[in-house]
Length: 181
Image (cartoon, rainbow, N blue to C red; front, side):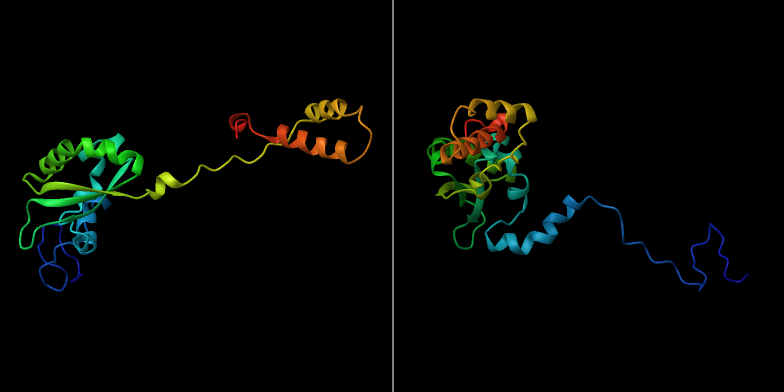
């Protein structure tokens, strides 16, 4: 019975003060800054929030077409830097015209004049270059295959009839959404 500790006691069974619990529940997003600080600083991002909050900084539509690459400052300073932004060549001209707005939004996010210039890097964005997957071909129905057989029934058996049947089956196998492909 010596090991029982009353609910109001500040001591554990060994008579020592209990240690504070360190493991608290936290949102995973709150740890991003600590975990990525070293990697981000190599690219000039003193704060990971430029990358993590990019969509909120410049807007949802523009964030899909432009990504921050790095932020460089003059030697020994942490203001009047150059923000390097990756974008497609098609969007570069539009972003060039929006440069004052982008600088203003980034500086508003930081709370001081961190960025004075923007340099656009015209490279493809990997997520934009991925081609959408085609849907798996559908199986033509029995009625469609019968209709195809009827359409080519007047031809003599041979290579032309076989090729037309394969072509017809291929056309019937296409999904309605991809008929223009």
